[in-house]
Length: 280
Image 1 (cartoon, helix red, strand yellow):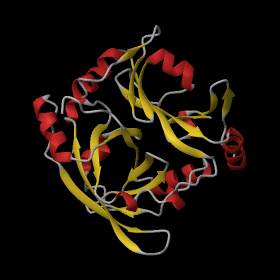
Image 2 (tube, one colour; image 1 turned 180 degrees about the horizontal axis):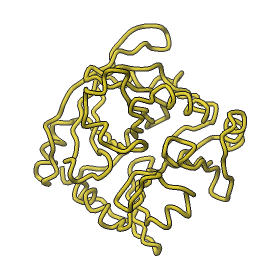
Image 3 (cartoon, rainbow, N blue to C red; image 1 turned 90 degrees about the horizontal axis):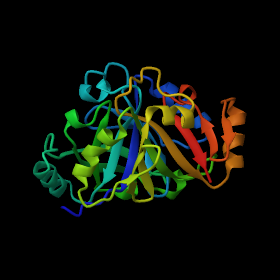
Image 4 (cartoon, rainbow, N blue to C red; image 1 turned 90 degrees about the vertical axis):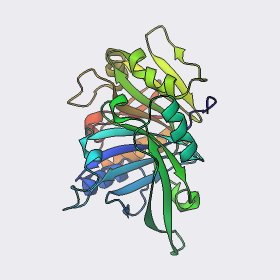
């Protein structure tokens, strides 16, 4: 597993007990969301499915916050960096070798109604990095046992034209330190360094950026209200086929946005403590 390669599978946005509010907001942002799913472990979600990755709104329904309590310790907002794998057990062995292992791989499922009305289950095996190595969130590998229960073409059409997550941004006062755990995780991967102190890891169709705090503020306008300088997942860049579609979706929903040479940006205070940048 020394040749383990990073590829972004999906991102998790912790919405806690605010599933209804989060779903309504992300629909206003122009995303088509799947119907609410209920995991066998007790959490619930909505997904925005793209070509090779997806966005997950993860929370819990009333009287179920006592289940999976470890999830709700993360701050509200972007809280999960999830990698692709075809073999969770082999990844776990690699994590053990690298002193990054937490608990052994776990299995769970959620019932799914497909676009044609048929019923099935989305089944997964996941294995996470040790919680102490990922401040303010989680990072784990997801093995999709039933990928067709997730990647359905009818679910991949969004009024904002988004087709992919292109960047996952972690802000930190010390971005080099924030990136160290992922260099340990992927020892064969080259880390790119920029003159501004940013670190970058390619992850399939996406890239993971570790950005100095002040640079992150300058690029994304605002960071989460409770950001304190420690490594924090704060922003996503998404590819859209049409920035006009993005602007139309936002304008029709009354969501403020900024337009510049890099694309269209929605500040964190307007997107559940998560800054969004749409590019073409």
